[in-house]
Length: 342
Image (cartoon, one colour):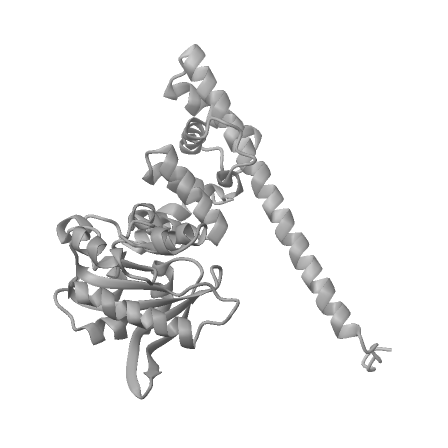
């Protein structure tokens, strides 16, 4: 009867949770399937247009007419505009092989148009497509990663990883070390004190973690180490949840000096001895400084026993006059949202 309390079985809530999760997973799977089919359709349309252009010399007028006829037949579909057909042609040209098994085939269409607009080479497009799939980047994050030259900076820091870490750990650590790190999100200019830089990075920890890359978790700032009564403090300590290792970050706002490597080597050794567990991999140290001479860095790291890398940092990727010409984030979002994201 209405209004009466129903006596529920003891395991009802457990069953309800299982069923809710099953419905959510099924809906997510259905959306992924629809997206995969749509992307395959767009690629096939682009391939056919590309082939006709090569064989029959189709011009832009025929593609415009094709868009009109398709939209007349399928008015409910938003993705059949003239401009989108040109994107489909570029899609097929950029990925000439069927894309079902490729990372790009798992991305929403809005992501793919960003790859086509912003990148020129197959290598860069495939790198960003794979990263976007692996780490679940939104379209705006993908755009930010491209504008920040994430591919070019990833794995480029001079290090001794190959000499002191066994493979594949050495390759994974190298990929986690960027050079330079882009701290533009801090809103800083000119000279700053190391403590101020450290404070800003922890205040903006979400952006800091995004810049460090996937897998990093923040452990602490000014982490205390005691060695037989002597006190030491690590600027920033992170743990990489995929590599199962600590990362010690030391910040220097000036030019790299060889003695910095010795201090970082000491911190890494202490963390390995005091904090590292048996199931953890070796701790890695990364020194981030205002500027560096790579030859001096390599000499300094050559005899170090701890795995370390040295990177520079920057506040801006573009000169101020060039940056002023770029559209703001709101404009970029509005422009991209005008494209079909399905």
